[in-house]
Length: 268
Length: 287
Image (cartoon, rainbow over all chains, first blue to last red; front, side):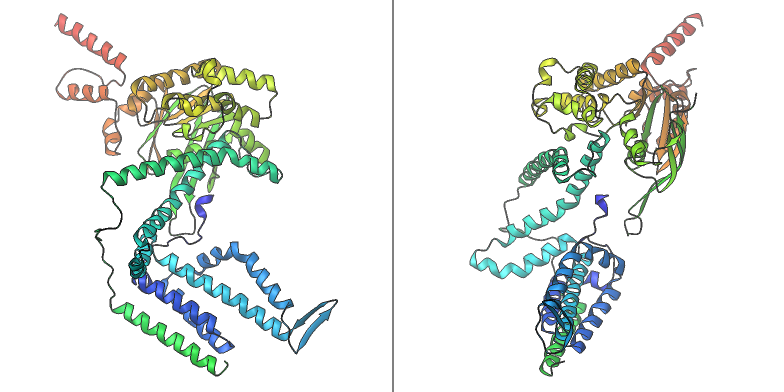
């Protein structure tokens, strides 16, 4: 059922990674991605992989969950792989037929590109799996705070994101319920050609939209009743504070990116 | 006569293999005879809604079987779809599933999915509308212009129009005013009488089930705790209260009267209460 969708879902836990400040995790993710895209050779990729494996191990997120989240991306991965495999020019020709040539450089490049995407997505999943949506938006809001100076609506954006994230499970549940209700009236969602299938969605989408609007309306009223007026002068119940493990994490991040840059200079 | 529905050792676990794994139902067995009126009670999260979705093949049991007329409803795909028509399920707040432009079209959705002929669909829509008291004029209006109670009756008509042998309703009276509740209960009763249908009604209203149902199933934490007539079930009032469930108000009053030393049997409907009190008065007159 729809409930089993795990893409970017939060896995409650109490590992050291779960306990890190969300800002630390966000910054570390950026550092990790920058390092990943700076990595140029087998050794630096090995280093990144070791770092990722260690992070996953420490987070206690089951590897299965991360692999399952990759499923929707298989097509993109295959596409990237093929594109790089066939369209990289190089010296050492491995196979050549018709107009297509596969070079050793192309094969290596395709492998690196696919690995890079896989590792980038695993890292992102690790963030969303170990950080609750509320912590995540809190962290983002705090990181984007300086942008308030140029009148960027940081708080409003964070609140919108928070509400959107908060309502994803609710809407999924609602969709599930409406689907069941229409199936109970004999709606057939699984068979038929494309046109029939699109038509079969109407009995689901109409009630879903109506309920989404109703919910938005109710939420707005409820927020107004509690005197919500936007971010001005609003204080937080849980203040974000960097603690010792956060500094350790930053140190690891600096070491990681330093090592990758150093290796890059030697072409490794 | 063979039971129309049979549930054998039913178990359902949600989200197997994730940290959210949760056993909603465990070792449930019971059978339903044709024409029975069954009330299903249990606190929120006791698994009763999950159970209802197993009875028409919306959810697949993780273990155990559900038999309709002696045949496993998951035995083949066509039969599972058949079950959806033979066992009608009205969800909680069914008015949120309305989607068509007119009430008529919405009620016709189910029969249309059954692949019936146009005249038969028309007959069923009008008959179903009749059961729930929707007028000819309302049939042509938009379902979104109706009041809450009317919307719900339209949604129930949408299931009744499939003429299911078993009609399952998940809290059909939730959130309605007393008048609306009475109407819905009367609608269900008229459908039952006309079609000799089997009714299963999930509810939190003890006085409703006490009055309407011939048999009660009591669920708690995914297990079937009691199965018997209202009299049998409500005579175990204390156990019900311990499970966090309610008992009919009259039963409460009579339990207290009994405690105070009056020679009364526990009753569970207003009519019985009147009889019991009359009897008591006459007894006193002779004393």
